[in-house]
Amino acid sequence: MSHAYRGRFAPSPTGPLHFGSLVSALASYLDARKHHGSWIIRIEDVDGSRCQPAFTEQILNTLNSYQLFSDEEILIQSQRSDTYEHYLIQLKRQQMVFPCNCTRQSLTQYDGVHPHVCDSTTTQPHSWRLKPSSTLYQCQDRIQDRLVFTDDLKNSPALKRKDGFFSYQLAVVIDDHLQNITHLVRGADLIETTAQQLYLYDLFSWTPPSVCHIPLITNHAGDKISKQNHAKPISNGHLPTLLRALHYLTIDLTSPTSIPEALTQAIDAWHPDKLKNIKHLPLEAADRHFI
Ligand SMILES: [Zn+2]
Image 1 (tube, helix red, strand yellow):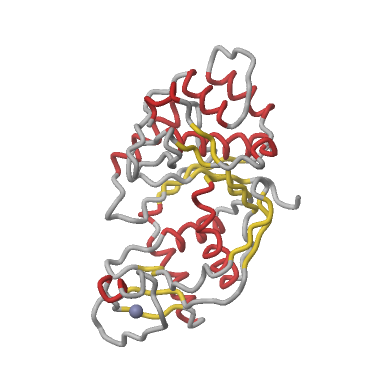
Image 2 (image 1 turned 90 degrees about the horizontal axis):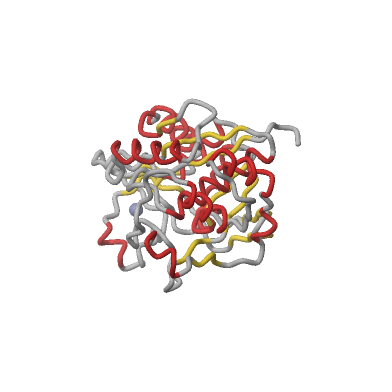
């Protein structure tokens, strides 16, 4: 590999860290350490209408309590609007984005998918949407194998919203590139974001990072554990929770007595290959206090 491994964990502070997020954080951390690489935390609070600084602090405290520290200064996306604007201007010059004033209501008749390239030449506030593409993107995922994306690039997502907030998709691609991130290890729920990101990498002529999507953690009903379905937050770092999270990454440890010892053993035992062919990682009934 020509570049030193650089990985990251990039939570959105829309709520406290939950069990599924801790598993994602650990997976990206273990993979980086296994490759003797850097591991960076980035706060993806680009959506100012949903994110709260109090959650940022809470998430960082939780990660620190599990001895998961960023190797570099933590990037806060809400402070980087000028950078995102710079690259949006580049896409405007390339004529790859278009202004749009369509209302959510007018889009409901198209199932919320933007149907065409509109042209709002008004001075009214408007969003900037990405032009659709018929390119078929694919990539090799270290756990999910070949990912082929069909039909994912026709909906013209807003890269900058009418209210001035930049989209997660634009910000994540720009920051991963500017931070020289070489490897993404993240939850399988983000597979669906990959095609748009590959499209943006293509438009900027940047090399995308290697991707690795870990299986989703599901509750007893088979639903994804997430803030949306009221996953309980985890707060104070303690060894049993960390061991349970590592267990979900199919890592068995030899009776560690401290978090640093467990992490050291886990780095040694980390083999993402073990997660191949696993669709979901169900939480057992005994773990229901996490969901
Ligand atoms: Zn429109």
